[in-house]
Structures are given as structure tokens and as C-alpha cells.
Picture 1 (cartoon, rainbow, N blue to C red):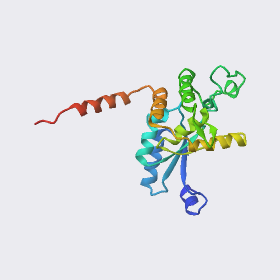
Picture 2 (picture 1 turned 180 degrees about the vertical axis):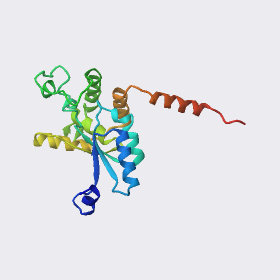
Picture 3 (picture 1 turned 60 degrees about the vertical axis):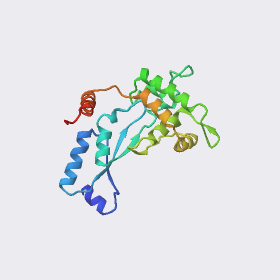
Picture 4 (picture 1 turned 45 degrees about the vertical axis):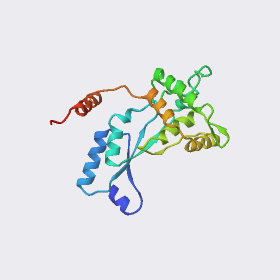
Length: 206
């Protein structure tokens, strides 16, 4: 029984993929279109303030093909809760035993610092906003993100995570988070940017 049959019979509503490269997703989309199969509607992938790798190829592809993004491990295995960075951080923690998803701790420390600054003084329903809620709120402010897969262990964690949907980040706060977490430029990105700037400076012949 193929996926088209499952959708047609109502067993499956939509077809999505998980942890695929951009070229693989495009190949699947092309095959689906060529054979008139049900479309690929979503990709489940890792995307956080300390893991923005999707922005190189995958997110532009998702936006171009109108495919949704479901984010798994939105707190980077708990790292973006802030409890693994700072003077009170304990070496006896989950990430000490199982460092997944991988995080650049040097860059991550700067990200956590800015997140703490933004969380300070914010409130939702009379409760102070924490670092984890800033991480989730940032994702919800990203246009490609259609849903987030939460992994709370306790009811209070789930309630805190849900309240992140009410956290509003200003343009200045989003800019600060973007600046501290931005990916270093790689080829061909820097070349395309340079060429675009060159074309913009060219004047049409009179």
C-alpha cells in the first residue's frame, strides 16, 4: 500500500519527511509532481538559536516550495533552558552524558547571555519569562516554522512551554538574537551576496 492510497483512504492526512537534505526533499517533490502523487507538505527537522544550519539551503527551499517546517528538540536537548551555562551549571546533567543535539558551546554561551538579558523583566500572565520561553518564542517568530514539537517531562514544564506562545519579541530583541546566533558565511552564500551587491550598483546605460 503506497502513501497515495493511505491518504485517499483517510488513514493519513498529509505526507511529510524528517531529517532530509534539501536536495533529497526537492527530489521527492519532483517525483511526486511528475507522477501526480499527493504532495510533500512538511519537513520535521532540528532548528534552534544554536542550530541554524537549516538557513543555508533547507529553509530557502521550504519557502520556495511552500513546505511547512516542524521543529524537533526546540531547546537543543535542554541546552537552551540555560541550566547548562552559567555559574550554577552542574556537570551532572543530561548533556554531560549525552551531548545531543551537538552545540557549539563557545557561541552558545553568548546566545544564552543575550537570551537572559531579553527575558529579564518580561512577564506572561504575571509570571516571569525564562530563557527557555525566549528560545521557543524566537522559533514562533520565524516565518518558515509551522509547528514545534515539545518534549516536556513535567506538567509545569509543559505549561511554561505553552506560555512561550504569548511572549512577544520586539524588532530590536529579534535583531539582537539574530546577531549573536547568526551562522558564519559559507560559499556559495557569500559569493551570491557579493554578486547581488555588484548587480545593484550597476547603472543602466543611458
